[in-house]
Length: 244
Length: 253
Image (cartoon, rainbow over all chains, first blue to last red; front, top):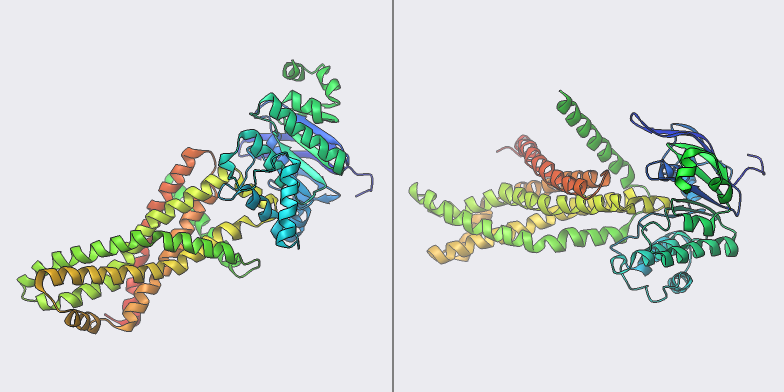
């Protein structure tokens, strides 16, 4: 890979489940330290695309490059090593519901760092203070609101200080205040850590806050790319319908 | 024909899943803490259910058999009959069936819920090897705990049988113990107890397989739990036939 290759590069990715074609030649990229919002309606292949970026799904054809490595061809410890450079925020948070918030974060931290227990505790408390939930440590995910769960999930996703953050609908189902809170946290990650972010979303408010660039996906194809403003003024009829 | 093909596919998938368990079993990391937690979940939390079942079986078996034995003038062999039937067959099979209900459904529902709420994916993207953490620990816990719970069931069932005999006929406990144990051979006890490790393996494999690959939502999780119980129970009964045949070949009748 050349040193000018983007942090994330998707080249002509196709994916089908049985007869159903989900991705039909998607190509998209994100530069280091930038935030890309992939926008589109439900069932257009957004989440499937994001899962390719962390190796949860493999393309039928095409290439998925992350930090100069083809993640779709990596297996075992090499794949794990690259995954540790990537944080993933799941749509529903995907917090381990049998563990408290503190245990959720410690579970990841304890297995991938050589920190002592007191050091880990300190780091965990810093992380949950960063998402403005300093008293949530002993609580179980079921005791938190949707917005709080998303923020704790974000804290867990970035506890290992990854270079890349992938967000699957980071603000879906949240009230406008929570949307701003979560979006601002994603912005702070970029400002404070220079993290590269790809967010899959259909939330315009979230995209307005976080996106440097955006891509519009429809029926498994990227129909428009550019700034959010450019997408809004795109002449593509599906894009016009989506952005109203 | 389509249904038959699907069954064959399912059997093939479960066999592959079992193969993966064997392959991963001896590879690092060993999830010791999670294994102990699962043994507690499997063993300690199933103990009351197993003890109540065992006690009930012992009492009922004693009550039902006495009349029949008396008809043939063989009431004196009641302790031997109880010991043989409980230790060799009823204890292991009933314990395993009860556990297939409790643990098979529990494992499938838990893993299925984790799958549909993306917790298994969250483990995977965190490089935490969900298969080792979730599946291997549960399978090992069942393989270890099924025999231990069976021993507990056997003891309580014999105790229940003795108490019933004591209350009905005033049978002396020394006579009961002497007769019960004189009829048992060490190979009977060891083989019958050890075979429940195989049952534990089958129940946990089916439970894990059903839950781990759930697609969809809560409805599919419920179906996975039900399938785990049905298939797990059937496999216990089928495997028992083979195990009994094997014991007859190895140790004679």
